Length: 326
Image 1 (cartoon, one colour):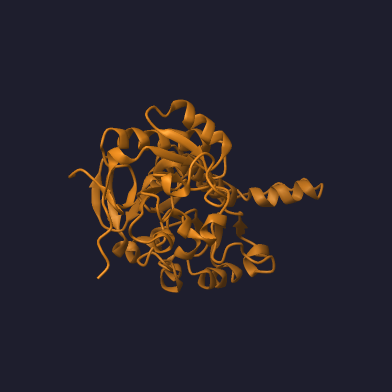
Image 2 (cartoon, rainbow, N blue to C red):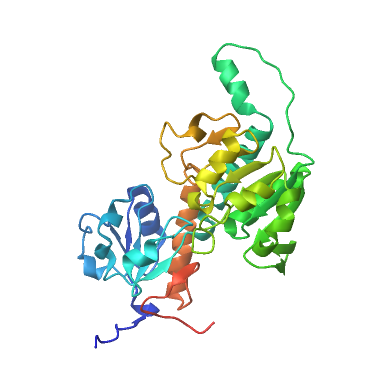
């Protein structure tokens, strides 16, 4: 029988690796009581061995480290810069603690969600194409105001989207995995979507990907949306059954505005890429200037929590960490 892995007190976590130079310089200047090293999780760390790194921040712009996730086997805590963490637990195994990015991308992704809604409702893509062709082409469009909007997902991104929607004079319905009350009122459960979707003009999806959400929005739920409804996805591509959505959009019954797709990238000759009523972005929701100060803030807050012996935020799995009782 394999021995149980040694637990690691939070007080033992003192060496932190950062994968990008600007983040490394910013954290090194502000992280009191920690030794900061530069490490992209591909080459060797600068100034120490891999096994000396206690907390590793994973790269955001490069996924090369995922080809050999064993590089973090001696790390006690892996901090992601992304909100989504689907597949990472299987890659790194149960002994490495894993923390997600939480609210780091909420501002940027919610901006993309609203931008997609406005662009699709007001046909801004049509206007831009006409401009590039040198045509002055006035038209009448739908509006965001007075639309019945359903936001599925009540996490950091979902809450940021709903907060930004309220000034647009919409009829807003919030949905999460289970029904509950929060500081903003009632949240419906996903089991109520069958009753909610027939009264939805704009469906916004801000969900993580897991067994419960994979292809959650498929042929059956899409068929419940009224003609002309808009499907916006800024969560994970596989939350939507792409084939079912493609059939609805290419038939002209539904519209879509997507920042995430499945597969990703979507092939250039995929029917959605040229379909009328479809806007497809190359997964840019989190890639914006608001991300940088927020990831710096989160990393510093995580280090402060560790220094004080407190549970890190957005902990997906505890790994070998000795954590205080809740």
